[in-house]
Length: 273
Image (tube, rainbow, N blue to C red; front, side, top):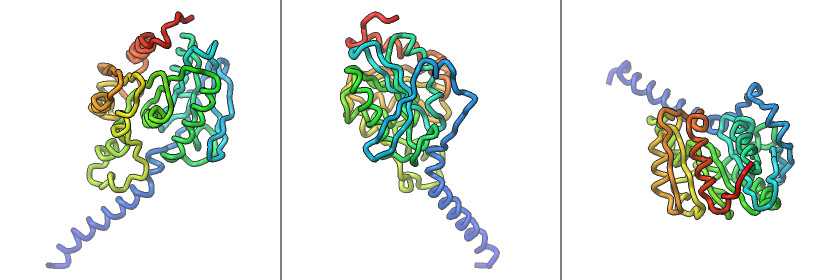
């Protein structure tokens, strides 16, 4: 083979190898971009919640925000945010839940929101267990709400701890499934270190389940919402919000579905403010 013809495939192979190596080493940054959007911080949220320090089993002290329920039997909802957020980006949901009479814990992860540590799948699961332990000491009625990356955290926690209900907003089947669609030329299923395989775990969740997401979600394909729903064995419902994308599901109709779901739970039917 002439040298010029040999150089073309060799160059392509080198470029591919470099890109593959870059994707492998940058995957932590892609999964956990640690984006902080200070402009979206919410003074109302700060006024209605208190900063609390919660220590994980591996010794990391995390700052989260908490609004107590009026009594131990009133549900407290733990909100797990997405990968490109901090807890303040779940503030709009928290404030509406507080207004409806629920307790709230805005969970935060290691490495996010000024907290120490580096995020990882085992690390975020440890953070979720610590958040649960804090709330369970104060409430007999715990509901999990996980958005995007937080859906994977919430599913794992719901397989380990008793909860009243599980709510998943724009959830994925797994991080690997999302990455495989985004990077189809690369063997991401082999390379991925963190997987958040909710599809495998969801059948183990015994609590009532609500999944809601937008039909125009450009980050997580809506068919993944349906696959999760189909795999679940507990009492379940799904709401596909027409025209909503990955960021605006709550405001485009998701709120109504969540409030109706909460009202349908026997443990949460008491009249609220």
